[in-house]
Image (cartoon, rainbow, N blue to C red):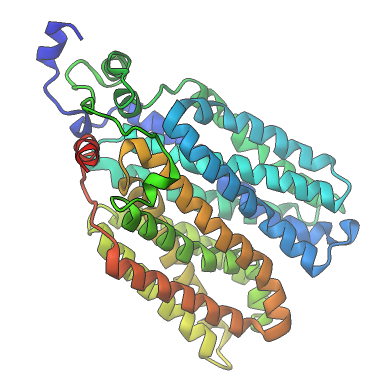
Length: 447
């Protein structure tokens, strides 16, 4: 950087004022995350229409419902180390194009095995985006606005998931091939976001941590202005970039445990109930599964917006523990209240959905703050992978457990999962609100 620019650069990178570029980065990430939520949400609705044509038994319904979540496991696990070693941008720029192509192929399938293979591949692409969207946007966003801007990803995900529900039911009566059209629509948001993705630069924090300070400074100067100092270059980057064994080393294993436990214990009930919400409500004698599902999905969206409003107003730790406790209590009442009135049940399901959706803001905000730049994508990836083992298993098992033991047993298991998450976070979850990422990186080198 030349001397005049150095004099003018008086504001720390992590304290930069909000620029139009930050909003553009948020939009590029948010529409991608909307696509993720939509792609996962549309499968649960479309399967009911495809059941007779593809001869789907309850086991096949569970397999197809959980396939994308299983693909997410592999995508997130493998993407984390790659994004930490080679950068966020290569994956961020082009994964939506591949996802759009796979989504369109769903309209041509004629067998359940082919659909299963496509859903696994789609899940893999979703896993790549879960990692790079969080990492890249975290590293671009000033700390004062980090909670609210990253919280937009939660709103986008819930919006995509809810939108899939509405689109699915709008197309439901359009003929025997309606399920194909439902699946095809998941390509639309992927294609819309491509221009924003392709033109997004690499993370300056990642560049500074990999000896490319001049490139990082040029991006900061071009996108944020000459008055913003580029990220500090760490004096010595870790010898092994983004390796899983670093995450389970004494320096980071507690944060890795918290990341995996909080995310896993949150998404197991979220997906187990959400994927088959209409069937669950019908099983507990709510006459209209559609109305119950509609309220549930609106609650997901409302909860995400509420979480966005409060995420920067309270500590991350208090938000985490409070939402775990509230969701567990609500689900406990649902699991033990016999002859519950339909109105009370829908209200309790709405509260449960809203609280969990509000807590999902922390997946986008708290999870990236737990790790330094050189381990961030790997840490996010391993947490996502751990969560998808649980969510895929729960999505597969829910219809089987409900058929064999009743829906209240399934809801009781969700209570136990939420309680486990609360205990682990109470013991080990650190506070990360307003952490400066470049200072965190310097401290990480010292560790």
